[in-house]
Image 1 (tube, one colour):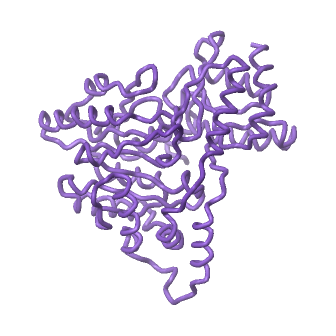
Image 2 (cartoon, helix red, strand yellow):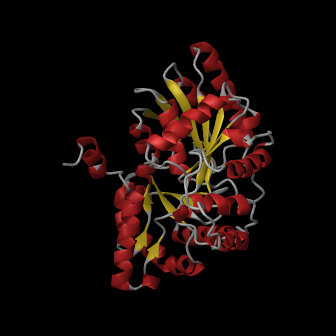
Image 3 (cartoon, one colour):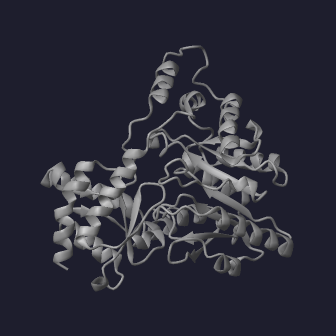
Length: 396
């Protein structure tokens, strides 16, 4: 018999809404033909992995040496951890070593391991909303409470609102930067302000509150935007990320945790995360792709096609009369539900489905009254969707 709390989650309105739409898309494409269904539901990067990654895969596949597929230390191969430390040092402008890295089974595993390591029952994790829908489940997995704090109208951080929620139960603030679903990049000033209120709360409560930065879209930015190096502004910062989006490797499940060397007892934190990785059943990150990433983490990728598709989809929505937030990074458009639907994003997404447009309701992301479109799809899909969007808006 299925556990009650899992059954309740499965049956809830917001559960797995993205995957549900994606699976419906597969059925609709069989019925109506691939070119006649406009599936913007799933953030599945469609760029091919860069040549440096492909070359590393080919090289590692030739290795038939004894033990090449065996266990390694749970935190990952030392040489791989050192390679990721180079990456983090470059991004953060802070010297990081392999001792501050744990290799994980994607960013989802990384975040679950961090929560397992730091959360006691009833501890709170503050998240600015909208946010990645699975955060609710990850927090609940480890008996934590997700505290949703709405962002400002432009989706920037509402520092005062966040400060009002800080207390002795606050274990972490979790930010996704660039944000899924809005594409918002939280400014350096916002990160500095966040660091300031966290330091104040640490002194007040005597407890360290971590700043967890979920950064799988860090490299996918537009118009000269940059993601702030949070290690420079707050000692107790943790980075969780993966190579799913930037190197187009979502199915290979290779990610990592990086802790700021300036934090209190980083060695203890890394031990706790490593233990969590083991007891959660992951044991270690995939051996093969650890080796691949060690050789190719710095592969150069041209993301300009995402910008082109972003601009094309915005032009389509402009013609259809749909309002949206202009994304600064990632590959999503967060769009406003038309007034006639009174903020019911589920109903509007059902309406779009009648015109073979698949979108994800914003409620699942903590953004009621909005819906998300993933534009990591073909330009053909975007261009051909124009008529469907216009017809959908005419018939509301």
